[in-house]
Length: 319
Image (cartoon, rainbow, N blue to C red; front, side, top):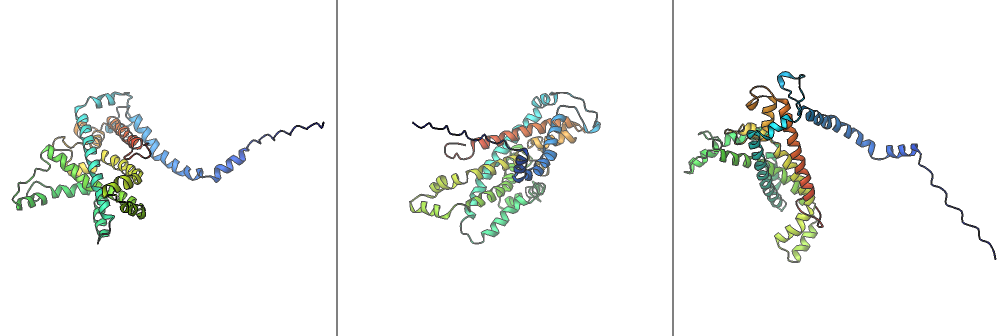
């Protein structure tokens, strides 16, 4: 009987050299991200960290460099301040109403302009103009159009039709509605561009096959268009919500936060508190304004996480 020789053990794996690891790192995509990460750290991370520290002090514009650490006093004051809670409530109402209606209007316009329509490029350009114009200019423009005096274009048209003029900005309830409508006029164009670009990526053959199978327009929208655009819808809603929640220029030029404090948003109150005016009584309370800014960041982050977690349309039973 012949003895068998045992098989030789496999060679031990050689340890990677540091040089090879460095070469792979250099050859990979990471070096290209270093400049972007550095810019983000310089222009985002550092200002956020400085603002967080500033919110824990009593720094004012009149005494910059003489800040005293006060801990969470600014946050305690904010959450017990009736004016801030009122502006926070209006900001949430303004954001929810404007974003929801802006999406409905923008998505409807995208569906309309995605069809073969004569002169649709002209319509697209005209609608997009409302988003290209600065928010500050939009506010002044609509302030002139909705002016309650005889110079107001809209009220002048109503009088010519025998209808009573509307107190667009002097009545608190009407002023809130006016601000929301103006923001819808502007934001719906932004959503239209998003949705129109997504609609043009949907294969035409897929829609035609559904039509041949007898699917109605609503069924095609629900089972084909919305699932394919779910990711794009989520991104559009995130960007629109962030811009609407942090709105500032539109309020400044349109209503100035009035009448009274009916249309005061958190962004506008933060500016007035930090740089003077209103509750600050001429002294810019930078620390308290920074605390308001940190709360705005937290709310914005919460909106983003909520959208990413839940999504506008679930795919495969997952968000």
